[in-house]
Length: 535
Image (tube, rainbow, N blue to C red):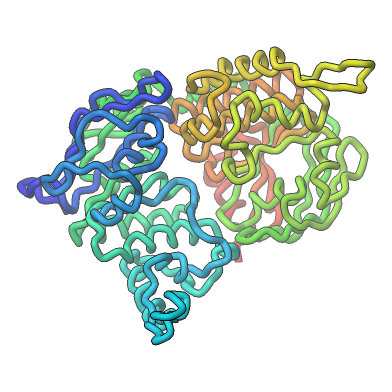
């Protein structure tokens, strides 16, 4: 626990930052003491990630003109030119997006570039490549870091074979293995974790705090902030608008500070009526029979499901039980078997182009790995799939012999979705990698909307998105469904989110559909289905 009389470990003084003329941080002041846990919250685009990049010496900060203000660590002004400088000074960071090497084991990732080596006499002649790794010492150090974390993971498992939660724990163990660690930044560490895993991580945070490690905890799960943090700092529009002891506030108050307005569950839901019976007589548009999917960390064994034309069907379930595997398998991202029929025609599995030609679209849960062209503009991200698949946004010359992109049409459609989805950006030509995670997610939605599909799969649409943006994204999905008649399947780890947006909810358990209920069903009923086949 923090000692209020201790000298500050870290002081951020009058921090300012702009990107390409867009002011993203204004006069940020924050202090953290040894062993203190500070919860940093705010809407996507509020400036949290930029502030942490400054603190961690991210290259993009220096490449875009640096920052104003002062960072003081242990009483000394510091200016990190790279993450290596920050690490050497005792600062660690677990990013929202994984930075692990897939073909390496947990141990190899935890000790990457810090491996203990056995010196060879030949190294003086042939160089360090003649040295050998001390495998037993690596195992011991990795085991110690995992023990400090308080969560069991297999240190010999290759990262590519790990469930997503274990990847997150591997990232955290890597930071804990650094002996000089004084301050750990955790950016959305529980977003990919089950409730049980998240509670284990919160307990681990308490343990780190007791050992004197200060922690900056960034999350949109506000109850976790109240459960584990000493103080809460709320950011809005690049400023710290409130800072208070966690024991002296609550979720509604934090939400009001974050968004500057009231956001209630009822308002976010916006359900005009219980729609469960609206599609009772609707024809089946998508039929899934005996689907199995070979996706690491996901169990999809025998899924049978019918989706009604025009509905929004929610798919929920515990982590690893198969919900994420269903759309990934149907869309051909992982090896799959079984039968999928759309509008009476069988859709071949393991053939992504066939799905796209059948007017399917998919918003993946992996927005950086699958969803975006990070180094390209928002215009190119939104329009390129429709250009490639449907010949949209192209001008035809010489009777179609020559085709050229229609820049005006591309800009028009991108600007349309920037407005409708409230994407925070400098312009439609800004690069996707420069946006916050939540705004990147909105670009993924815009890209799918631009395809004008008949069938849309959306996986974890609001992962890592704040309460205000969450309501906007869910509203956009409902509006797209209602105005265009598009059938939507939404896969989510958040039950309340499914209840807000869906007509019916199918629960996946043990790799199968355990049951389907109307969205108006009680949490207890849905929870019973969620657990019914877990093995």
